[in-house]
Length: 78
Image (cartoon, rainbow, N blue to C red):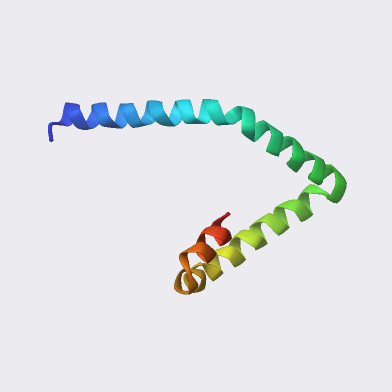
């Protein structure tokens, strides 16, 4: 594949990423407000700690969930 084609494909994928981010911003802003409200109520330190802990536990459970059933893996990733 010529270099100019590779650069063109990468630029095209970059534009797709840009437009996806632009469209999803209106959806994400609602979640950021919910997250800010939780930080006001419980404190940012606890909110970040629980987020990191839950992500780590979910990461550790990924191989087991994949062995059980693909639906369990999808639910865990959600």
